[in-house]
Length: 240
Image: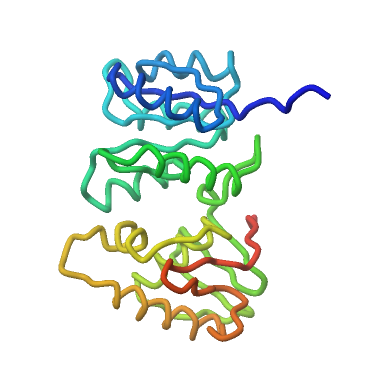
């Protein structure tokens, strides 16, 4: 029986040292890796090589990563994309996700963390289908999240949530079955922009559980993983 084909990655970065280091590491981690040095090369490479996932630097000459991402999505190409960013502000990262990125990683980073993110994105995406994070409405059992209107309904009744709690729910529902640390949630929702501690995450999680009628001792939505973080365990699907 022939061996199963390796997962194919397209690695896009204009820095030769980063390409060399990451390519070697990713290949040792079991991936097949194709490279490009800018967005123009990446857009030409995607239909030729049909990668399973794209690792895309943001700051590049000729065509930057965000514009490359926008052009991919305009083509209705839903190949998963992880952006490599050097942006400290939460608003800029959220904008990138809204434009179609599946995840992001801030430079500098541990290459092993990139491997973990790649595998997590691949688990939650389906080839050729629009990902959860680019859908306007999401359903999880009797919970409906209207991302455009910033409204949440449980059993057809609107549940008022604070902006931070709603952002947490949005992140959970676009990353189902993924173990998410408190540090990651602080980075995504608060951006470390003020002296916010991990207790703030726990407080908003408690607010979410109350709104979703979720028992932490027998969770149907948000599971606590002691010493590690949280996991959204309910199924999530897009809704027209």
